[in-house]
Length: 605
Ligand code: NAP
Image (tube, rainbow, N blue to C red):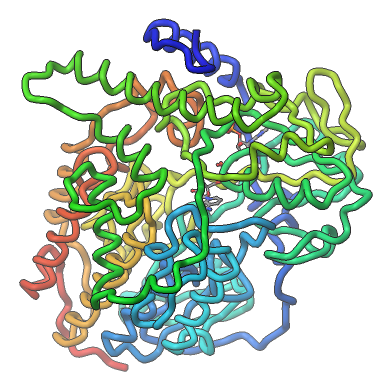
């Protein structure tokens, strides 16, 4: 028996988890409509937030083009400014600054990582977030304020998609062409395109026949729902809504939807493990007594806890540090053999998942509904979620949970069909997430990046990432990539922490290259193979454990054996952030540009 505070029986738990996995491991579960080529649904990517305005094409030469105006791109811009770079152009398909926080304005959106470490540059900006977990709009406005402070907005090209970027050997510049007819040349090219930047629309039979409204949560249609971010939805009183998806997004937008709509049907394929959120306003005295450097120290404290390192005090003290860190770093006592270690790890995991299942039973009044909402898999099989109102929303008479572990049967003119039952709805809202973080960089960038000898990045990385530090790649001179998971760098639960490190590295590296009068740099063949070998050498094949997981983007939708070791991280598992940071720091301090081939001719501007 598993659930309702059952006694731990490893065999029964394992069998239950496998049975639940198998209900979901069905052919076609990961099929998507490719919005890059799909004519019926291409408009799902359109920007509902900022009107498109005509402008003349831009033809000019700058120092740096940064692709992406989210956290990564803004921080890269800031650090380049600090290094003295003058002409910077951010290019983004969005109508403004913010990246994921520009696009994701669905009701209830907020950060899942503590705001005091997630919102960057709090000390420099003299800003303290209003709440422990910030609303999306607060984050977007904060990023915009940073971009304005560092003069990154006026020269940015918004609502602009790059179509092709090519290295020109003779002028030692990147030539960037866009869908607005721009042609900009740049000495440096920085890819800050994001990790989960491509919204995912599942391919469901018949979906194009639906006659009502439909949109993805990353392009919320306030014209239809009324209201705005953080405001009640005013137009849904007589509307029946289908919400597809119960990941981090779906769980955040259900409560405001339920408060406004006549009825909401929630189509759940896999239940999320939903821990306590405990959001609260920032204490008035939060900033008192904070020493300079407090934010980096707080980030380091969280990362240390996540990596299982001893700390005096757990400053974040939330579900990430209580559950994720515990499961990620099971105790290893002296003399413990591997079998005992693994059994102990499983028992800890079971206890934590039982806690989540019991929470469902406590908060959801109807036992049948509660049972469907209980997650039966190991904690790290899916990205954990945190919320305090999602589960109780199912006690409302206008919210119905629809269990569809194998997905929807189809969608008709009237709405979704599951187990032969037609749900008639006015709108379908797809909270179906994003293409996985391991989506190849070239696809996430969305344009051809053609380096030396006409070789495109997609081609150069066809067998996996090939880089120095996960940030530079041979054959692509003067190109930097902001570090990201699956790209030979490291993973941090708080992405901002990695972005801060990557941006600082890029700014300081460019500062050094400029001081030397370098015309162009490329990664040496030896340095790239050594780095890639190190990544491959530390790869831990966890596919046996991950194959037992419910399918998700974390285990390649049930096929963890397809993970390419070259797309691993620096260090074991999620990587060793602190060792990675030390290594980058030593490289910068040495000032020798070790591993780079430099063309030292004087730069013509
Ligand atoms: P997600 O976690 O990938 O969830 C997508 C949901 O859609 C899942 O419930 C999934 O079911 C369901 N789904 C996908 N295809 C389906 C199909 N064909 N039929 C029925 N259901 C389908 O996406 P997300 O919730 O947008 O979150 C994505 C990531 O963004 C998160 O992991 C997180 O990193 C980030 N995020 C962060 C925050 C935050 O910090 N506050 C908020 C939102 C998102 P399965 O589970 O069965 O696949």
